[in-house]
Image (cartoon, rainbow, N blue to C red):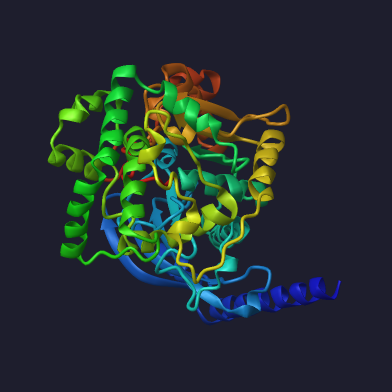
Amino acid sequence: MSKALRWLLALTVFVGTLSTAGAATAAQQPEATDIKDRLLAIPGMSLVQEKPYPGYRFFVLNYTQPIDHKRPSQGTFQQRVTVLHKDVSRPTVFYTGGYNVSTNPSRREPTQIVDGNQVSMEYRYFTPSRPSPADWTKLDIWQAASDQHRIFSALKPIYSENWISTGGSKGGMTATYYERFYPRDMDGVVAYVAPNDVVNNQDKAYDRFFAGVGTKECRDRLNGVQREALVRREALEERYAAYAAENGYTFTTVGSLDEAYEATVLDYVWGFWQYSLLADCATIPADAKNATDDDLWNTIDTIAGFSFYTDQGLAPYTPYYYQAGTQLGAPTITFPHIEKKYVRYGYLPPRYFVPRSIDMKFQPNAMRDIDSWVRHNARQMLFVYGENDPWGAEPFRLGKGARDSYVMTAPGANHGANVAGLVADEKALATARIQKWAGVAPAAVQQDADRAKPLARYDAKLDVRDVERELTLRP
């Protein structure tokens, strides 16, 4: 009871301080009408940069967040946020990719579908949105959801129309977790290619996926390259060592060059299906045993990336691997096409990709809670997956308690699956529901979902449709 009282008192003081500051600002100045002035009148909001874009205002901002939302008096950090402003009379899409936020104007698919504003959030602990020093125990899905809740609460008085949250991959997971912890904030959720690793040590679904994805010819090509790269390990590791020396790469975090090499090779097949299409199989060496070392090196480097498991490659993604090793879980797959004598380590767990100075302890109930909540409580949620995306091997599923919610799969699509890639009737239904949730469905669409189409024209510079390429095994 005493702990709860102290937490409530601290929260009251923190919020009260912000409210007092906001009231003082309002008392000293007339009500702002320019959108930049209105944004900067929010206590804790500061401008980093404004960038022009036709038809919009685009702002890069910093927002003061508590390091610990349960104990807000324990310190703050600056979280990077962007706002793509169209009009306060339009709905708003709340986007996060679950990693760093882009500081260039972009429009996610739901934003085009509803012709709205877009608020984008950088996930906590991705630089520069990281406290210093960093208390890694405060990097969890509830704290991140609370970041979103505070941003929404601050912006809702300005953007008062309906809100839709969205994100792809880890961002789709983030949108789902946000809905679980703050189900009254958003009017709808569009989660793209969101993995759902309910039980971390039960990963047979991934083995089944790789046994049947694509065509046998394509699988044989990929498996052949992967196996041959381990058969020729000694020669290719000599090249890897020279490559690392030339670029100043080190391997302290993962442990050794040998471990980094194997991890990269074992990512190869997964990486292909995550980022490529079946048609791209033509670029894979057809006869790995007779391929040159250059051929093997180049195809693996292109798809998996030999720079990633270096200390320098891993460092920006420490927050992801920390979460994977504490709450999110991480897949483990087998390699039946490779003799055991060639595989020394197997798929390394997230612990190998986080500096040993950072403590990690897995919490098995975190994802079980999310999965159960979605099955029984999902309201106005849409999950979109790609048929050939390995991350979709463990998708979110809906139970009897779900209402006005959907799981759809884009045929032949990879980790860049979206509504536009769905079959025609599902594409129309998804578009119509998103517009309905956002409160902007035209009358014709309300009567006939088949007539639904995005309300804003496609903009080749502004709209992002391709998968955001990230080398190696990461959602």
